[in-house]
Image 1 (spheres, rainbow, N blue to C red):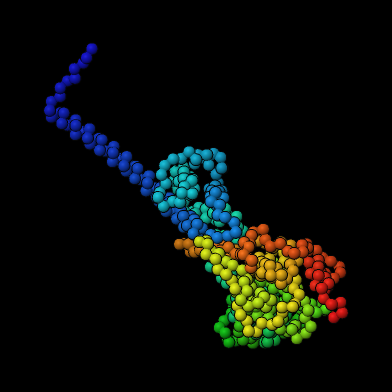
Image 2 (image 1 turned 30 degrees about the vertical axis):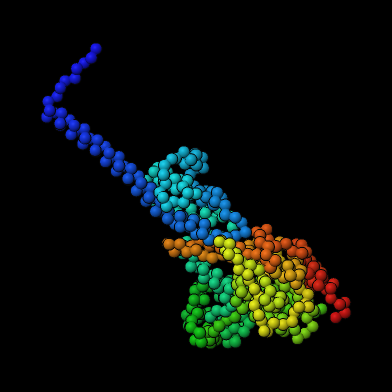
Length: 468
């Protein structure tokens, strides 16, 4: 059976068509607005994670190390850091993220899409959540995922301090009075450096500082005292100190000046064996090594123990200059290679004041904290058969690092170059293997009363004439 539809009057038909059209238009606009709103929200979330995408770009453009870049490990590190920050369990959170479909904003790196989805999903369930609050944690996770303990994220407060500390670590001198300031039993105690302005002014080790320019320092921190003592070069500061055995304070006038930082300690051991300990490579380390060798050159120096244990590196130029005392000018110290494969040869420069050390027997002490530039020096001396290495494998921290400053004033500290040995071998994270493996243990006998030094000394002594 068929039912015949009623025929509507023309005016009613027109009204019905207009109504349907307006309804359809409303639905379309509403859907479009909803879609655009979703896109805008997604873009906004992505923008609030701009620090993450910025860091990722630096890593991909500049990262260079003996280890290949493992994107999966980096993303995993970032995801774990995010989940820890927002306090969610991996399951079912990660499973739910994996089920999410949809196009991420175009500027998000493909490898980080799941990371963006995780933040977006959490934000939907927690509308008051601000994605920018987790950006720093995610970047820190990216750095952790590199698997390099030296690669770190530094926030806007930490970065200037770290940068300044790194610069100070390689400086050969500083402006001041030249005293170590320590807190002992609530008192501020001074220990002047040799040849420093404070020593020249008459400050003695153990003097208790009472006042700076008339201002008492009781209950002040070491940093507060250091800040008060600082000032322009050549200006005078009056220090009130109490000396052991005396009750009346002394007023000592100290003129501020350049204080040379010592990174080299030396001693001539009986039997014609010299001992040089290099604690780190500062800009003046090569000069200090030269001074020790020059003093011994007037005597019967027959062999040398160079102690690079627990040397974190520092100035590459200083390490090359130190090598130049033992290797010919123009010889290869090593190589450095950046991300794009460009490799630079590091050459030992000419030195008109170089002493004749070609026949000097050399033993080098290394350990698990011998790192970076000190590893390169040890490798150069080992591969050229200029020295014999004693100790245990070095740290394996052989890359060149730089700060990559981010838009909010924070920074990431990245390995940006690979380093190669004198012979062109890639210096690996496994560290440099010594020629003679010796664990460090105390010994009751021997000049050094310690196994690594004693084995090196015995090795050199066995190659020297018995009567000398």
